[in-house]
Length: 503
Image (tube, rainbow, N blue to C red; front, side, top):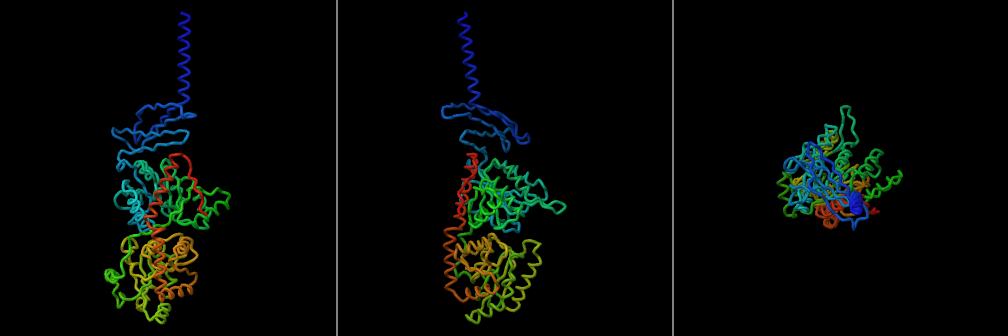
């Protein structure tokens, strides 16, 4: 009997050791989802051996992002020493693949980033035909898969956006950023400095995040640097538009004793590869647009196009056009018209809009110009630009330009202000345009392009090569795919992105 008792005691000790060892190898932690979304339930038991693991494996059940059938939901996440993470899957994902969510300004909102995003999404959908692409926008946004939830009249606008992201449970969240798009202004006319935007990034941190800032200056103000530092810390990938931005951001971080972010990628502003009309179709387009005053349809045309606002400085050209047109006529015998067109985007720029428009209309009364009011987006924008022999793009504050993207898409020679970061960078890279710094230089460059048809052809050819190899939306969408993959890998491995700086 004593022997049997000892045997039983030994068995109990062995079982106790096994249980202790098992607890040391496996830990199960359950965290319930918010009650308004689901009720928790355990859906399975995980068994494994510890042969290939040096330490503990944790199986973690995390909150679902939307209710499943029966009002219950659950998502699982397996974490190991290697950091492997399995994201929640959605039973409503297109073809079983999780969607892409873009947070952005969206048409018909009168905004350059809205028109940018519209084209970007078109080509992202072409790149990912098996994934749905959803848009979360401001209240003005319209269209299929568009959720107009960003109500900036509320300080907590980001809550509804975050909840929609969690409901959609995307493969990646791609955000177009410009300070004004996410700035809550209170009753005292004080902005929150994009604090709500940073809160949004915190709320959706479980998902891969790619942010594409559209305002990155070479010499940012201190609050902008603090924001960029916070942004780079919270996003998985941050997309800049040109190498110059990387150089300057690196310098600005180092000057403050900060570590330069390792999650910066360079992806240029995309341009359409599928626009353009043969020379023989241009007279018909001119008639379609109503450009029939006098002999306008047969004259050469210089374009001055886009959203009309103070920083576009149309007056640089309108103030010298009468004398410049006369000099072109004297040297070439040709009559050139100035086609100025666009619309007011921001009421704060109404004074400049009215000034620029009145200057053009004064020239129009003299038979030297034509003013054409239109919303600069969609096919109409391309048609208006297509009838121009070349385009003048004056500006005093541009990190990149949607107008330049359309100039490149149509392979139109152009003249633009320097030095202006993105504009100058792309002009140097593409070898498709001329630069000026003074009105005298602008006058000389306009006359030069007007009288030299071969130069216009060379610049156009250079733009065609640059479009095909560098900035075509097809090329850019491929780069977006790489950014998405990088962001997803970072989330899966639970390690920050660390890319080499391309300096």
